[in-house]
Length: 221
Image (cartoon, rainbow, N blue to C red; front, side):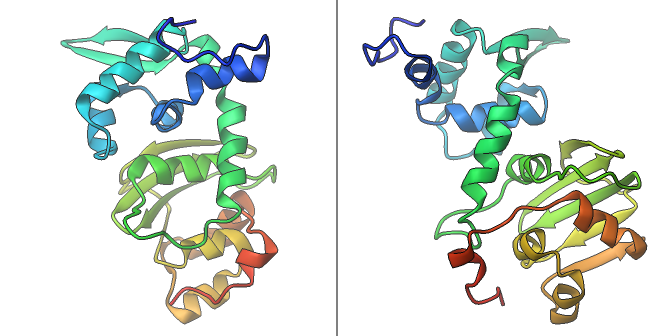
């Protein structure tokens, strides 16, 4: 473990994990790399709130912990999760699900990013077997797309003009919680384009429940 890390002084797996993962921005970097390999500038541009020097520090720490590895692609350095780091995938997904349970509206100053939206699709994939389809999702300034297989999903940041289904609008979070597409479309909080017959498959594929106290809040306008 890195000597610069703050030790909890306990011979405990959770404490050891917290030494690496508990640093500011570490989870966000790992979230982005869970979606896919990234260059430094892609990580920086996707997270404008992190200073470049801090991003460099976190990447070095995660590399030293053998969670992240880098390779050369042409003239660029590409960062990706190592085999050891990839084992965090299920943990990150479950943490994302847990965190989203009380997240219905953005707080002041919060915006979705392409990576956070892609991660939301990844974490909200259900165990339902569905007809394979492709979808592009837009939430505010963020765009992500997914190739949904019968029982899984592959997500990426950005647009996919070849997608079969396009879903957007401020009611997307509530739609993922209650699955009431008819009401959302009628209210104009969700817009659907492309093959609208796939909307039911989308609802079956993605679900991010809300705690009762949050889910019973007034619907988004």
